[in-house]
Image: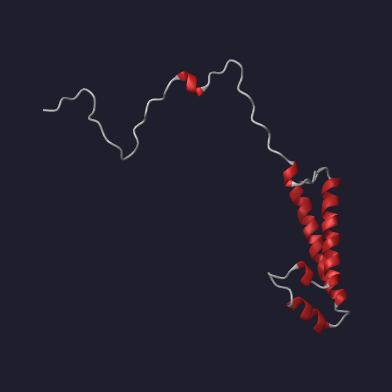
Length: 123
């Protein structure tokens, strides 16, 4: 059975979070105060370089694992630049270009000038 990319990424993220927590616990060397200090230092604006080195290594390993797991399941990882959009197809040989068919009738725009209904005389 082929797993969807969403399922694979969810598994990878779950593993990455558990690995990072384990790395934090190991970095504190069993000292609860050190663990609390390390946890308190992590916030939404924490940069990768601000994390303890054990957590950095765990995150790097998780990223490598994520890419290899996606590739093992048949997904292709590529840079956005290398995936070019398809070129526009040329028109079929018998097709008539819009300019060759003549002008379109102007359609009245909402709120534009109104004309009296056809067939009524004004007196």
